[in-house]
Image 1 (cartoon, rainbow, N blue to C red):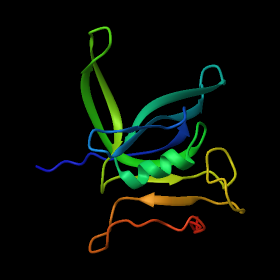
Image 2 (image 1 turned 30 degrees about the vertical axis):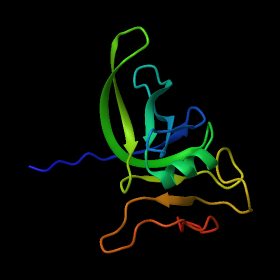
Image 3 (image 1 turned 90 degrees about the vertical axis):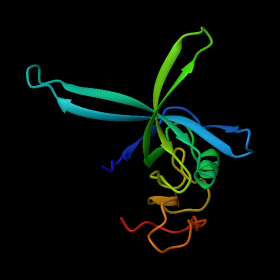
Image 4 (image 1 turned 90 degrees about the horizontal axis):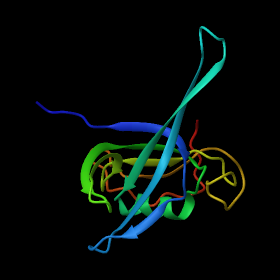
Length: 156
């Protein structure tokens, strides 16, 4: 039986992206994203909010470059990736398990949702709107993802 492991989130970066080089020479980028939901408490009538923090790891070279160059704390992003849990030993010698949203090569998507010139978005040029700078999911029968023109506007 086949399974599906796909996560889609829209949120804001909680910290600036951190880029590192792997032994292979490829770059990986990590950051955290906050997603929030709000509701009205039925008993008290007060507005409530719950924030979840998600650890993001990008191994896709093109998406890592976009994240490293254009994202910063507060940037609003749309991300598609897969959940991965890993185990490691921390500095205190304790085993720690962590679950991350991972954007691998040829899988995953990153869209910057800030208007140009706003927090974390593309800072050059003028005009507003959403920008889809990178997608690493090729359509069936299409060529691998290419660099997108940063002046393209998404029509919604």
